[in-house]
Length: 66
Image 1 (tube, one colour):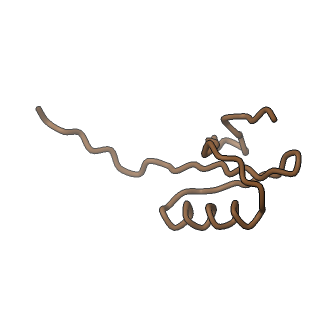
Image 2 (cartoon, rainbow, N blue to C red; image 1 turned 180 degrees about the vertical axis):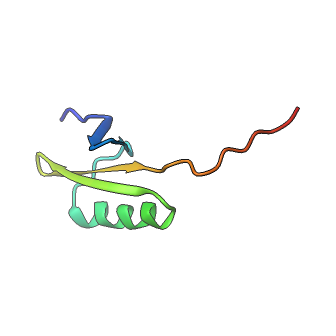
Image 3 (cartoon, helix red, strand yellow; image 1 turned 45 degrees about the horizontal axis):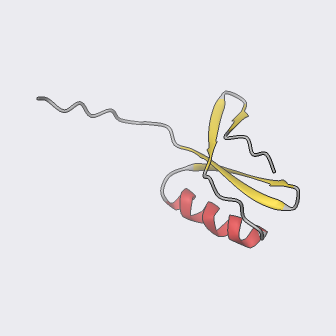
């Protein structure tokens, strides 16, 4: 199965988490975990397999002084 690494929804870019889930429950569990860590999540079903795509917007940039 060919998997797209990036998924675009409107102006938002989501990145595949690199795993192929056999069951929808596995993808749903992973989705909840990512959402709990502040990610936006999209899930897709392709060829009977389940894929999870995530994105998180950077809200603060910290610059370390040298």
